[in-house]
Image (cartoon, rainbow, N blue to C red; front, side, top):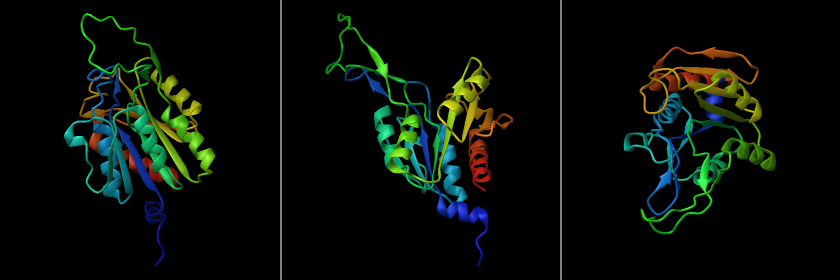
Length: 228
C-alpha cells in the first residue's frame, strides 16, 4: 500500500509546541511574568494530536484546563531557562517546533532568598533571558540536525507586520504568526485571535478572526502545506 504524502508527513515528523508564560522570581514569592494563559498553544498542540502527530506540549504556569493535552507528552516548566532546556532536549531530526509560548524576556540578575519586606528598597537589576529560537538555531548547527521546521509567534502593538517580518528574518524562521495586539478580542486571555501567517518566502496570508481552537487546526494545516 502506497502511503500518501500527508500520511508520510504525519508519520515522519513530530511536533513540539510551547505554551503559556514563564516566571522569573525576584524573591521567594514575587516574580516577573505576563498575562499569557497558554490557550493558543494548547489548541495548537491538541490539533496536532487530533490530526495524527506525535506531540510534545511544553508549557509554563498555565490554568489547569490548559496544562494537559490528551495524547501528548506534557511537560511543565517555570522559568525561561527551564523551557529552553526542555525544548533543546525535544528538538531532534524531523521536528516541527511551534513557539506559541510567551517566555519572559528578562530575569533578575539576583534572586533574593527570602521575601522582601516593605521597608527594604532593593536594587533589582534585570538581565536578558536566552532567546529560545536563536538557541535552537545553534543547537541545530551543533547537532547537525536535519528537517527541523521553526515557527514563531509575534505579539505586537506598534508596526506589527514590520516587526514580525524582521523577527522572521533575524531568527531564520520558516514562518511566523503575527498577532496584532491592537485588535479587539485578540491576544492574551481572549477566546479568539486574528492571525497573519508570514512565510520564509515572504508570502503572507491574513486569517479572519476565529476561535483559538479553530486556529489551532489552521496552523497545523499550514505546517502540512509547508512540508508537502
